[in-house]
Length: 263
Ligand SMILES: [Zn+2]
Ligand SMILES: [Zn+2]
Image 1 (cartoon, helix red, strand yellow):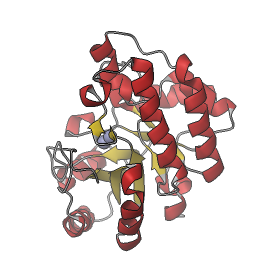
Image 2 (tube, helix red, strand yellow):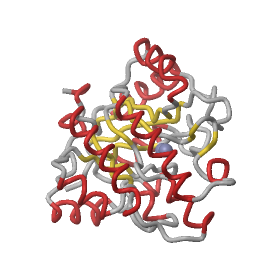
Image 3 (cartoon, helix red, strand yellow):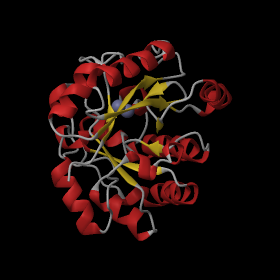
Image 4 (cartoon, helix red, strand yellow):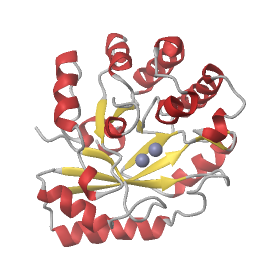
């Protein structure tokens, strides 16, 4: 089973390389039936992605790719939207005016400090991680998102910054609160496989946290490679997909089946 890739960047993102058409074409060539283009949209000025998003252009680019690929693959017009509680009403107003097939929520910065060195500086890891999780909880509770991306993102940068392995146990309460909010409001949990090719060497969230999610009654799971390059499409899906099935979590075979907007 080739699960759809629910998290893919194109050259419309500041850190993307290949065009929407190239990404979608490569996904179709590899047998994917569905892919979601989720370029970055950020609302805080300190972000590298700030002010770089052109909705009309993004939409048109995806529509053009659909036409050119002639139905070989379902290309969803998504977005990876960075939540910032200070801008919640602005984000809400934007989403009202600008429809997407899939709104993938993420937290890339807290109070204008990027997750990574800017957020970690002068803080204990526990404090920094908790600030992030508080923002992630607010993001999920906002009701703005269909799915939430890379739930334990700080480990990506924290392992080398603090020189410590990632251990989710001290943050079990924070993650449990987020999982409960997701389950209650039917926000899909993204299992982001980019962590397998970075320092954590495990997905976001990790396997232990995924067990917690499942034991709380969570069932909505999508896979996302967070590919910024053609060759990372669907990265690790086979391995993580079979692990998830063993745990009792079935990744979405079609994003349409788990995302309320697409039903
Ligand atoms: Zn992200
Ligand atoms: Zn991403």
